[in-house]
Image (cartoon, rainbow, N blue to C red):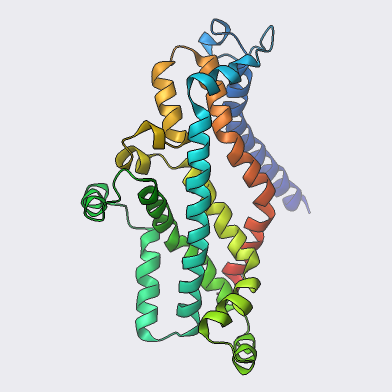
Length: 273
């Protein structure tokens, strides 16, 4: 009994320390986002004398964040939707027909989780396909970089779906396409929502792909807009802090709304594989 109590105290202390380490930078950013430029120069934890909410409107106007927000939203949303569609179709085919070739293809796909992206070779591919510096090109890049992990999650989940559903669908006259969209895909809701949220969050926070493959500021997502804004106003920590808050706020909202789906999808995928 004493050992269990001691383990609980150690575990709670460790959780408290980790939570404190995680929350200190966020607290520092939030406090300084409402200060004047002079008050925020030291980036301290002292509360502002007056809360300056106009810092956020200044950032939106000077940083042109409205345009970048729409770009990020479009890139993240569209790439995540296509990622779900193609990943689930691939996972369905690979899971239901486990031949040697399909097993090889599955391991080839999930190898992309560990392998680093070769940015310089990819530049030639983007130029050859005429997708360089285009919105369609960056959406394709975001989608394909999320596919390996998405296939891994959906493959495990589909493995736990009873094959009797397939047989019932075939008896009712379903072909492969109708079987997938009418029978299998509706069952994938927990894993599909998990894949969408993870793909959306990863895409929203991605920095290097638009830096290399988007040369026009009009097509930049939020991450590059923040980088550019920091370069111009690096002495105004109040504006930089407000800029960071506006950037992470959509991600935080999506995560809070979908965290229970993430846990459910990851758990079911890991158990049913």
